[in-house]
Length: 186
Image 1 (tube, rainbow, N blue to C red):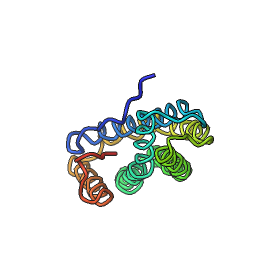
Image 2: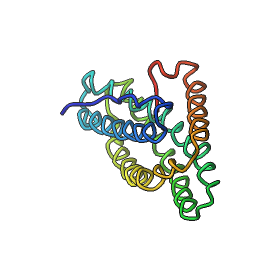
Image 3: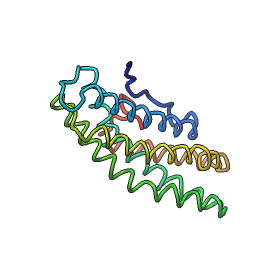
Image 4: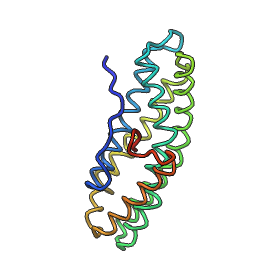
């Protein structure tokens, strides 16, 4: 099995919707990497360097980048889309934001397990089942956002989309200590 380390999404300036979809790609890639790392180590066998690195990257992503992505949606995107005054969009946003807390809670647990694997080259026994639970929460959530929420971004003015992108960039700059763009993107 070939592991794919998380890829970098397009720059925020290019297209906000495409940036968010690429973020979803990184979420899926991180889930896949964490699952493959856990399976390879099997909870008792020492993992090889590739799987340890994959666990480290996945842990870092779930610890730092995933919360930034949720904050982009909850703080920057949802209020702008609510301003459109569309009840169906508001209902979709309610579901989207409601999903974020349980996803975040489990993602932080998975991050800790991945970090433990990176430190010891041993996959914690719970990692595989917790990654599966996280995937079960995330997959329908991501699909819903891509089908229902992200297409509505096109209704926002270019200036509003640029402001959302600016806020997302600033979040990452603060989170990554001014190094955003050099390595990490969410």
